[in-house]
Amino acid sequence: MKEKMKHMIKSFNKQRQLWLLCIPIIIWVVVFAYVPMGGLIIAFVDYIPGMSIFDCEFVGLKYFRDFVMNPTFLQLLRNTLAMSLLSLTVGFVAPILFALCVNELNNKKFKTVVQTTSYLPYFISWVVAGSMIFIMLSNEGVVNDILLRIGLIDAPVPFLTEGKYYWVMYTLVNMWKATGWSAILYISAMSGIDTQLIEAGAVDGMTRLGVVRYVILPTILPTIVVQWIIGIGGILNAGFDQHLVLGNASTQAYWDVIDTYSYRYGIQLGYYSLGTAVGLMKSVIGVLLVWATNWFCRKKLDTAIF
Amino acid sequence: MSRPFYIKQTKSGKVFDVANVILMLMFMVIVVYPFINIIAISLNEGTDAVRGGIYLWPRKFSLANYKYVLNNDDIYKGTMVSILRTVIGTVTAVLGNALLGYIVSCRQFAGRKFMRILFLITMYFGGGLIPGYLLMTALGLVDTLTVYWLPSIFSAYYMLLCASYVQNIPEALFEAARVDGASEFRIFYQFVLPLSKPMLACIAIYVGVGHWNSWFDVNLYSKSGTWDTLQVILYRMLNQANALKDMTDSTMIAEAMRGIQPLTIRAAITIIVVLPIIVIYPFFSKYFTQGMTLGAVKQ
Image 1 (cartoon, rainbow over the protein chains, first blue to last red):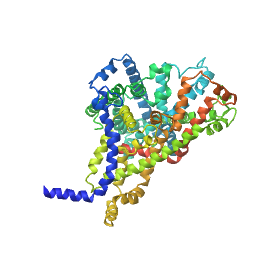
Image 2 (cartoon, rainbow over the protein chains, first blue to last red):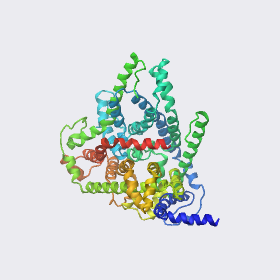
Image 3 (cartoon, rainbow over the protein chains, first blue to last red):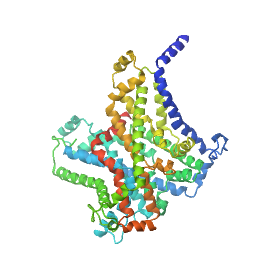
Image 4 (spheres, each protein chain N blue to C red):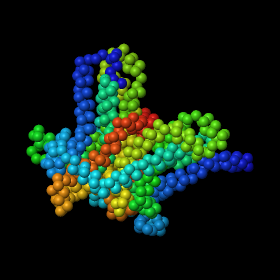
């Protein structure tokens, strides 16, 4: 024991410099990561700004109940689920199809150009993307102009001010921004395919479609499953920045999701406890969903993320 | 990986190849066209642009929008804040994560596992928006530049990237330096930093673009408007355009007389805001994907 202590002190002395470098980092992580985690307690108390959390009245699950009983809850849930289901279906398949198409391109240079162009929109902020959409989808914008010219519509369509277009617009804009980016994972998985596998298939008379069906798809299946599990876990994340930029008062019935509600009540209106409770509930459900999907995928598909 | 020579080219395969190229070209047009359209509108005379019908190039060419925007004090200030934020945020994050990566990959350091776990936990759990906001308020960071970069210096993800890179540097190099009496900090800046340049460049691009693009935290913490960045100025303009669609006031009418319209001004600001990204993009697109695939391998 004494020997061990001595050894520890000796090694501590030797590593004193590294520990010194660690001190500011530890302070940082405690302040900026662990204190907010502890701050989640305000979801369970009646938090009054300026008061210590421990002096506030403990109310248990009151704010969780308030949120679920709220008349707008069903609308929030509908919007959240509708938009994330669109992202999980259309938005999920698009990068896979795009990756397959890019992979079939014969000209290497063209392939690189297509790929590099495809993920450019990912690096544009939502404010910029929103500004472009505003200009292009307005009544005098280029989209309405073209639709009018080819005679598909008789009057400009108010894409931005009528709620019924919102979900489709959201899905398309998200796809514009993220398809190329999400495809990178699939394309890099495909580039790792052993050509011997395809050669062997070719000897047995495998066609091009056969290569896709029996070589490429099985290769990217684990990636697809991982992306799917992550996607399911994020089913209650139906966008945030997007709605703050694209949404307006006249379309609110269609864009108001759990996150924007939490922000509006929690920060703009100052109901800190309610807003925190909403956010916490969402994260807990997300974790449970990831866990359940992961369990299911391991059982049925033999692939999982943990 | 395209069609290998030993797979027979069929007739339908040829049709597919042609259709595929056309499809990809269309895809590229869809990705790039919005930028072209906005550039055309921003270079058009304001009152004329409002009529619509501008597709690829301006109908009445004019630089008035850019002149107006570049002479605007708010936008000048916003640009400065954006640049300051991006530079400080990137430098601190790159140095911070490199240091952290070195610490958690230093083999003879007893605390490396502790530090690693301390950060890995933050990857999966967090306080979320409101506790974070209350913390910044309590720390008095509202209306400061610090709030943009200090809370985002370290990240578990970049720590892992740095650590996996530093681990590949031969340990003997550090040992030799230690024998010669170099301090740990000196090893860090004389060996680790220069040797991990490619990875640091990758992180710098990522963090830099993130800082340039981020607007929500500015919207949250820049209450007095002193530290408004370009992104937030554009965001507030959009919000106004959204809310006051039919409202006109005297200044707007006066500006309309000079051929200045909110539409073309917005277009010009949008272009100015994305310009840095478009300019660096062709040179750094390699780095953009690196982070993504490195992360995928780690998973």
